[in-house]
Image 1: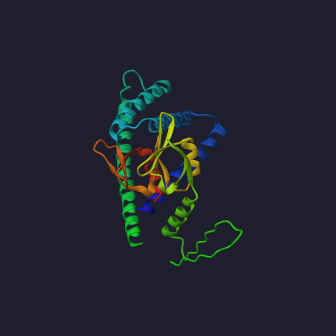
Image 2: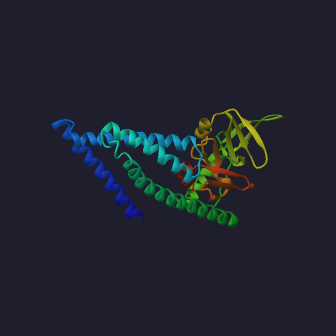
Image 3: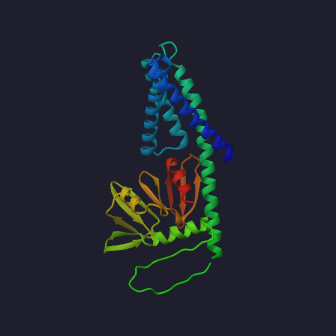
Length: 137
Length: 142
């Protein structure tokens, strides 16, 4: 499992480096094209969402479900705003933001819930082991 | 495990650990010994006293005042949460929420409540709310 995780992680890092190298050379040679502009906008959007997410986690203590519901509406609002500025959405199809964000959120929730469950199991197992060791001593 | 002690005058207390392999037990032992050197200057109604890290159950920031909780008592601390984290770096103290730092050596378990909040149970029966953001930090202490 850790081997698969390492391969996936290395793949993502390598892909990011390749994208960075290709885009840097493209910007030097042909300036900011429409594709590069899209990537830069997505980067900006990801940065804003990450900062808002950090502030949410730092200052609000909500249940996992409540936190995801509130974040869903806030992030959809941010994506919509960005979409209107970048020209991705029109008044007729702005609701598409709910679908795009919804898909990302369902995946993020599933991964988060799985990770929390795994971390709790790991911690409790180690506390159990420690207690057995202390009893032996 | 062998324990060798010897008196050496004119030198500070020195602990040397020799191990055939660096295992989790060795790591835990080093952490415990390092923790012996850490204590907090706390205030009680009848004056000031020093409290060893091993006696700290958790530290909480309530209305910008920092309180230290031992098994049965509560004391006031004149330090910020950031300062405490700095002092107790690499010890069993770990931040579990924006307002609380817990001593993992007194942790008896973590569970997820029905409302999906996380709760840490301590040896003295106290329960603390854990922010999911800090769960990974707790995991790293084990």
